[in-house]
Length: 98
Image (cartoon, rainbow, N blue to C red; front, side):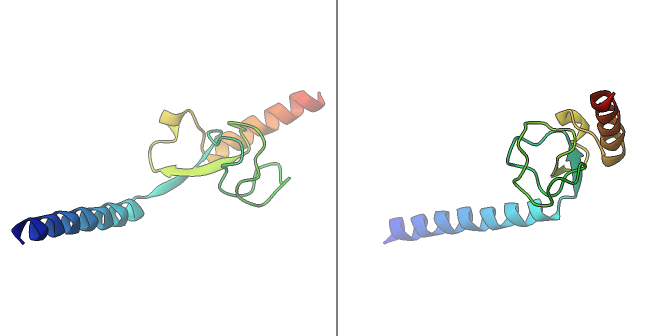
């Protein structure tokens, strides 16, 4: 009987730890990060306005696509904030239409 009680206690503590970790993760601040989203994993509409839904990007790391990342990590991931992404996007469009 003591073995069952010990196993039950261990499982309970693991489950509680998982709930606490999830709650802590939800509290973390997030930021939009452009240019780091794999194809099909963007979080919403793009700068070009060609779609307005999540999961519709077709190119990895498209400068016009964004995803939410933990605040303060965008630069570490090689991404850009909205202002920088817009400037780069406009330059790319100008060169393309050049």
